Image (tube, rainbow, N blue to C red):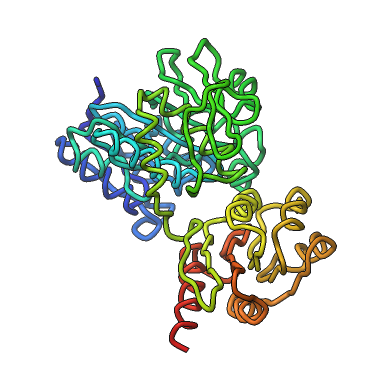
Length: 429
């Protein structure tokens, strides 16, 4: 792949992605300067731009296009470059890129493990937690780079494209940054690249026309989900009438996860020329990521599942679909949505009692108390205690909040860690 090198670069943000970009650029002989809120005041930053001759500004995902520093960089005529695109441009092999509102991390883990099961060399980067620049520096001869891509990273990509680009789903999320669903969807569409020479474009069937309108040009479109080229039915993924994947007994054997991630995986395997047998092997031994449908233990016959990563209602619905019908659900937190109605049916079907925490408690109680018993508990600790008291052997206590964590916790990880500590405390009581 041909790519541009730089003599000087400004790095905006110095978290893990900023540090990885610095390492890569300096390894190529590029002089770098770093700007963060901790090291520069607004005045110092703007004055520095006036006298600079930076060829590029590598932007960390935390800096949105509306950020005044980003606007100042643009006003100074310095091109913006996503750290994701910088790392991807140095990769010599093929790329699978996955975005979506829910399920990205689980999908890329399954993809990477399927590639390895098919005797390919592969590694995960991007929003998954390992910056793309770091992955390519440490794995220069990698056959497949599997990227989890967030909408924040897509805001500043220019030439980025993948051999296989996937949008799993588009649901209300991050609208505080993207403002409207139309803008959010257009940002997700940037994963398909600006060139008609880009690779396979995989989308949910019901969004095909919308993406065609946003992307333009003739593309290799492949659809999945209901009415798609690949669809899930009764534990299996079909391409038309042909069964291509049997997911029975795996994490992906549920109506929601199977219809999205399972069906998408059938399409991905075809587009990447990946063995379906390898995909099935990877599914059967798949261990969920922490805080994502993670079974953290069993006590007195009651199972405990940590799904703290479920920060919207669609993710909560997916967790309920995967956890049976005798569920004690702990939900609530800082709300990201105002329409609670679409999950009523699955709550009625699967939840024995709902234990509510955080700022969303009152609204959730008003929306759901007619379909399942609701108990406003305030804190996670109180909700956990009530759920343990009410549960019996064969039940599941599920933390799947459907909300952000920032009203009571610093992150979804901290919230999940709290839940796990409570579970482990039962065993030592």
